[in-house]
Image 1 (cartoon, helix red, strand yellow):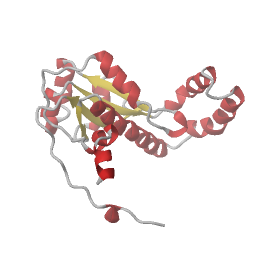
Image 2 (image 1 turned 120 degrees about the vertical axis):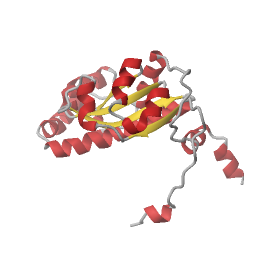
Image 3 (image 1 turned 180 degrees about the vertical axis):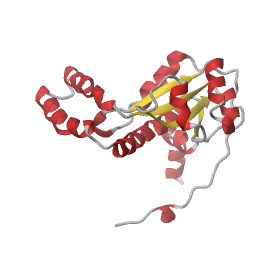
Image 4 (image 1 turned 120 degrees about the horizontal axis):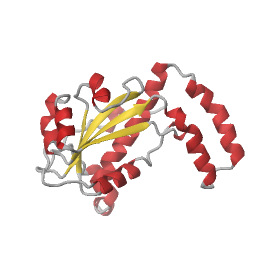
Length: 214
């Protein structure tokens, strides 16, 4: 009982275990661009393969942007219209173009020596540049999925609620917001704001059902 009480008083557990998918928001609550930038910065602390950080965001907050998105997310109108913003997350199929910038900054900040940078770039960069499209797509979707979950938890830690959305016209969304659809793969939409109504709890399969031990 003592351990259970300790867990319930831990902010981390309140954030994780209390998260709900919220579909209706208080439309009077707006997240400033400054705070949204902080939320995104904290979310991008998520891990990624060789630190390529392939996630890209489009923050849809204006009436014009929401009107455009609403046409592409017909079954999620309430989230789009009432949220403070909807973050469209994409995966960059050419994230390796940032490899030199990322690793040079690592050296500049003292995170690694120059020779290690050169060794690592020589080891993975050719593979990234020549990776089959299907494999690269899988890679950026996995990495971008990590940042999506982190984004939702960071938002909750700041007092906001979210809803991950997969039901939208993925073949049209990149071009609708000025992105190259061949380069930027849609991952998901995440609506964000202050819940108008508390989200509902949902059942999770027991660990013994979803886990095997080897």
